[in-house]
Image: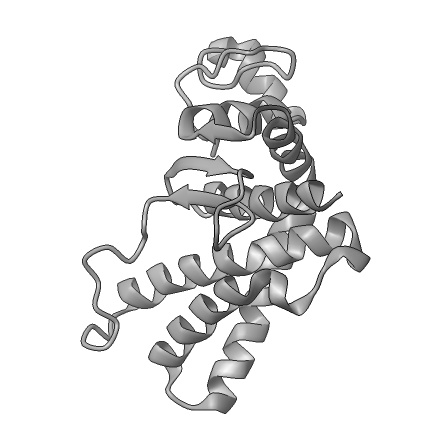
Length: 190
């Protein structure tokens, strides 16, 4: 049962990273000594020193990292509200709070900022639940997925009029059909 919780937690972080355009590298539900699983994406803060750079760009990149950190909790809670324990996301929460404190300074502003970003993470999970389920099931099946496999699973789970229009207009190399195992170019629809 816990492996399913981990799969949904990691899938939530993967889908949030994909949604806010952080490049995906890999995700695993294979436990280590310190973690139950791990999604790995490009560090959006690479090259940014928040203590010295007070720019809109730095704030946006930090927000993306915080949303990804909080999305695992949102997905695990949506999958099974009773599965969540506060210690499940300790490391993710510490990352989110540390980044928020660096951006805001005061604990009052940090608390409000974290609450807002929790709502944003929750909204992403709610809007992209089909993709979260698809990634979680793929992780349960394979254990570890590469960035290309993650993108293929996410894109294959997309449906709706826009996606169908792209597919029928000759965009099948960009958007694979839900039944397709091919990832195409891995580009995200706009």
